[in-house]
Image 1 (cartoon, rainbow, N blue to C red):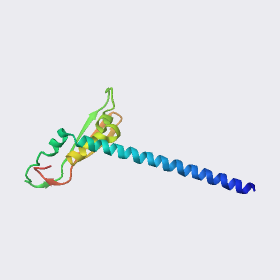
Image 2: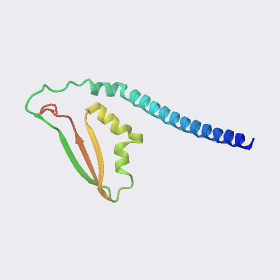
Image 3: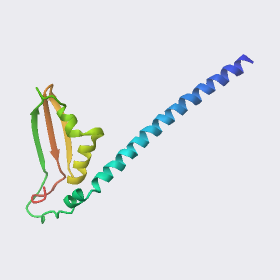
Image 4: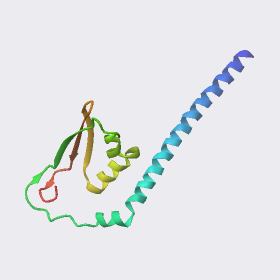
Length: 128
């Protein structure tokens, strides 16, 4: 009889663990959907829509890859510079990447030296 009760308690523990994992994954999914909802609401603002509607220049020149990089010293700053660029949960970087069609990478080269790299897919010079 004791083996049945042990098996039952083990089964309950497994059920509780899997339920907890399911709930944690559900919370993560809900947070991602809420974030996406708010980013979409932000991008629906009229002032942002006007930016999106600006026509791109006519394609001309050679096809090349756009790339820019710069370094900033974060020594002595009273705030987290990378955190400000990234924004809460990456919202700022995601919005910039979506609006501009570019990729942004932030890397610390040294303790107080932040490397910012911006790159775009190969396109005509006038567009890049």
